[in-house]
Length: 459
Image 1 (cartoon, one colour):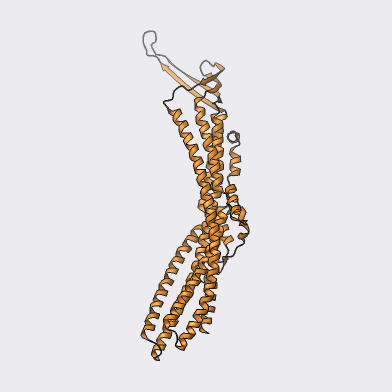
Image 2 (spheres, rainbow, N blue to C red):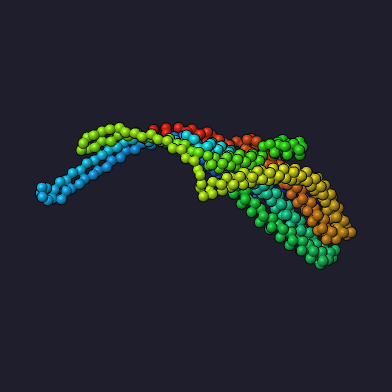
């Protein structure tokens, strides 16, 4: 009867652990992910990086556009002659000249170097957008890991607290049995040792929980409340490992980023090659001037063109081409590495899910068997056929099985979200989070407006 009471207390303690430690307000995994998405500084930094990369597109586009400027200027001149023969008083004269004009210059051909730079900038902006998604997945996975670390930590604290209470009861029982002559001092000493060990593991669990809660608050921006491992994201898991790998290779942000980086490196190589070609530009200006003395006015202008062909640049052009080619090769090697890493992550997460299922089944069986064994050993100890040490060992085995069940359940949830991240589906849209998705696509479209700067000046 006493064991059944302990098991009921244990179930209540494990069920209410989150409430007793973290508060009374429910906080699901979805809620934590939603809050973390809006809070995470890493995501905000990735978004700003993407916007900065978008400006590279505008800078590259400027190479094909004219440069137009207006200028207004003036000069003041004076002179004073020295008094002398024929000029007894000396002469003083001054004049002011005012000018205004408009200038125009444009590169009309640069051997397609600007085109290559624009392509490189656009590929870089695309890579930065994929980096947002990659960062998003890493952040959300870290949130899930922190969430489950807190939840399992609370369950372990409750379990080890119950374990300590059990050892306290056994110590009291062994002391009572010693007083009536049915026990020994060895039983008391063994119970005291187990109680000390149980108290140490309980305090260790508390310390670990505090660390987990601090990590949770770092990602979510708020202290954990009442947590629950339930979720419905298992529907996003592919039916087979091969399907999972195929989805990852087709849409994982890291792979898409690597592809965009290859494009950027290829465009960089083209830009370096174009340095060997000719460059042609035109320029012109028109203006007017007014002299304050003569009152003369006039309009003048110039128009010119220039063609340059590189002959020798001290080896800089050749070095630039070789460097660009090396960077292109490096981008392709990095892409192969990204494929391998993503494939490894998918296989690892898939195996983690399978392993967690097996561990949950084994731990569940162990808890069931351990409960039966402990109940029987306590009864046999009361009848004198078992010792207190047998009871303590049975309790330790049951506690180990229950801890294994907690850890396996935690591992299953983490492995599920790890697989979603590995196939590229741990994103706000895929999870259906109620957030404004962070993206620089609209910003990219805005900076492609080449006349925006001119309109801004006019306004």
